[in-house]
Image (tube, rainbow, N blue to C red; front, side, top):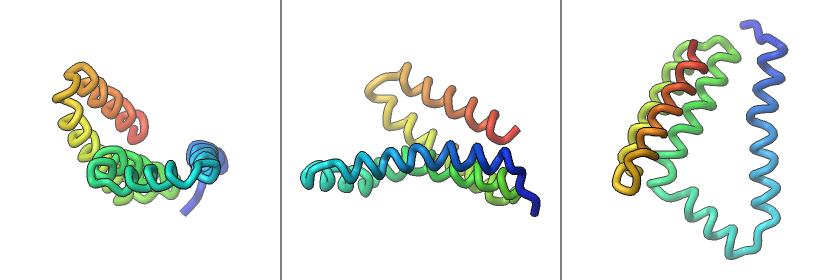
Length: 114
């Protein structure tokens, strides 16, 4: 298993900076905002839409970094499932936003896999 140095640097930047910013923002919140954020992050709706997309992208990125194809397949499957569920929940509010989710996710999957 050979890891390319540039891929590792990109991985650390892409996942490290947002993680640092989210943790720093969470620590600066007051108690009520923290409870509200944790309630939102633990909700079933958040997990099956945004959570699946983020976890899928992370697994795909790790699979690409370590050249593990099964991890890429699992990640792409989670991204597709999260995108479909997100599109279905957004469809009632705005059909244009729902289609935009589908287009953006398709482009991300295509760029990440190929």
